[in-house]
Image (tube, rainbow over all chains, first blue to last red; front, side, top):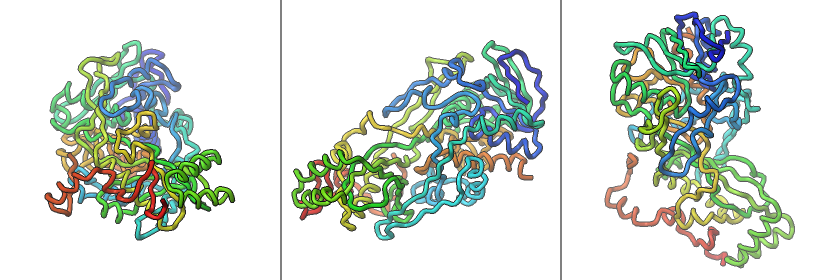
Length: 473
Length: 41
């Protein structure tokens, strides 16, 4: 059933088995799987079926540190969430990501790679991609491998599942129903308070509650609950909002490469090489450029290195050399100081403090990009394929440019999984430490970020949580 | 501060940090951003 709270008061058919707050990739996946399994689900979305300013402005906030996007344009707040504008790039975590205990306790996941991998085929089916990923090692010695990305159409979750949710006997979707409070005691949430834009209130009772409000608002709302309720509902002093992560995205340089058939493919380093170099994951995509760029690069190379420049000019005359742009997207080390915090100055229309995002890249993040680029360059030189020219800021050690892509709109961490409340907010079953029935879903769970786009794994984690909440029984 | 576990001694690590980050990974000839071999010029 579908209820639009904007149209006036609602009498809910509670209690529910599970109340899910947020209807994006995580919330919809979770609701559908639970509903199909016969569980009674309340799916609560702060926005409506379409974009509305009054909902979106609740995503406003402030950023501090490295240049970043305005928080109200970096995500969408209506049915379907950010799947209404995602790019469809699909690649999930790798075994390497779950095998970084040697980097320190804050890199340690409480679950195994295989526990997540088990849900990949079903997640691939949902986002409509081929589940068969064909990675292969290009050069064992240099640790270079080609990695396979899949492309979802992209699936917009609100379109794909609208009819099923509306017609479901088990799922009630509440639109324009903004989460404002939890009600409960003794570490157990009993009900959830929601409010519409006319300030009417709705209270829904549920056996379990799941925050699925995205990679920033899961932290914001949980911080708010801690401030309001202290230790009544979950443990105090959890690192809520902390270890927030993004994927830095920058153009590293350009290259002249002869007779190459690897354009527009993705490369990364092997686990062994990452470990040898003490770095994290970095993906490089090589994009073919036009003839004018090739001419410019040949001319430039002739000026600085006449020997190899003449070789490139000769090949260019025969159309046997091409120019390529190198883009990199890489993993950030989890850093406790990168965090979502509550604004002390600004609040949304419901009185909840707006988000403050404190985000900086660390030296190891830069090392990851540099070391990965060097391995790629070593391959180009050894195979005598051509020459790579780095951007000024890379080789001069300058600040990151602020006119590049910057990041991936990938909001990760903040309510991360851990084996201990010292390093995380939820346990391996996505349950908030100290709570009996409050859970988190979405990329805010990620202990580490890997270098791959987050959506496919969001769906995998949501399927896994659904099983934990009874769908798999 | 990152919590990586280094397999090298603290003394060696301190010495390495004196080397600019870029040069640590790109010791070869670099001209106008081009990563070159010695016999390129």
